[in-house]
Image 1 (cartoon, rainbow, N blue to C red):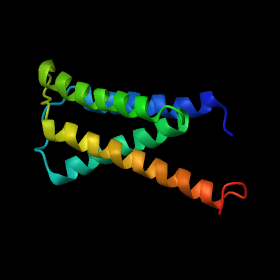
Image 2: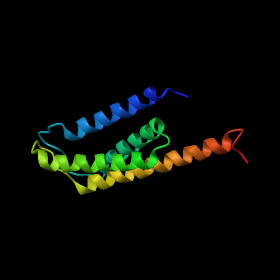
Image 3: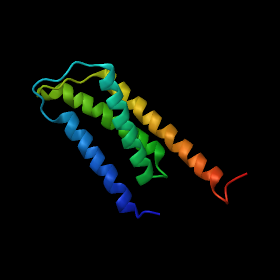
Image 4: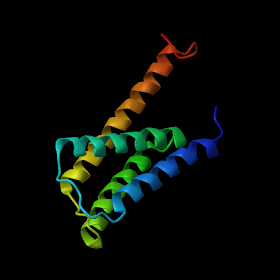
Length: 121
């Protein structure tokens, strides 16, 4: 098992990277596209998977915290006035990514449980 600090660090760094990418001033942002929504969903799916690895017993809190983070970033974008615009569709894409990450986490856990010598049927 990887020591907890080495599991938390990648999650924390990923959160900082997403916050920076979401809130850094932008001169001209491209219009909302389907690709943009996939990027949002993918980023939050990765955050969820890293968070589930860092905090395996706290999936409900993790999901709630990432949901608040994703919505909060969109609210901050709408208030900053630095070339960013908050978008409810982005918040929805973030939420879809969180749900996908949770489903993947549960599937991985089930595979490990079934394939382990002590947990198989």
